[in-house]
Length: 191
Image 1 (cartoon, rainbow, N blue to C red):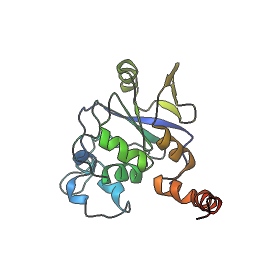
Image 2: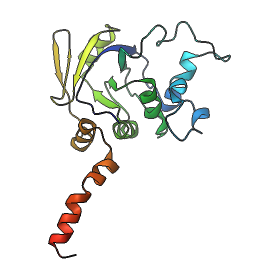
Image 3: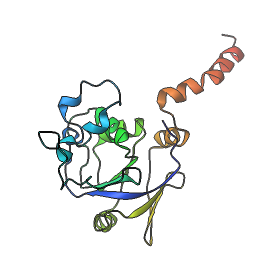
């Protein structure tokens, strides 16, 4: 996982509320056991028709995912089942941040554990962002601020998740990095 400190990106706006995990990654793609190939699965039914052709009116059409790594989504993003494949698919697609007025708790936990930063913003900020598709936005995790236009918007992230994201690791990586300290402690305690 890449360390996340500051990201400047254009936004993709998805004004739909209640985007559930089955829309993020349809259940038929849950047979995959890693992120490989999940970029095609991300929002698959929004992006492609039954024959696999790109839908011209999908919200990702014409979007350069190297430049558009932030989704601004409608209220209650990530609701539904607890599938970890949803943040995997977003990460595989190149999405680093999801901004909404509310994000489902289980999705929030899974996203943060898998390198996708999720941010709740007040309704007025959200409404402003929704009117600015493709807006340049800076997400500064160290300062816990969003910056766009004339706005500087503070946000909070779970302290442990924030530390993992800043260091580019996950909870297991954090534990493994502590092994020398644990061994030293055990030696000092005579164990």
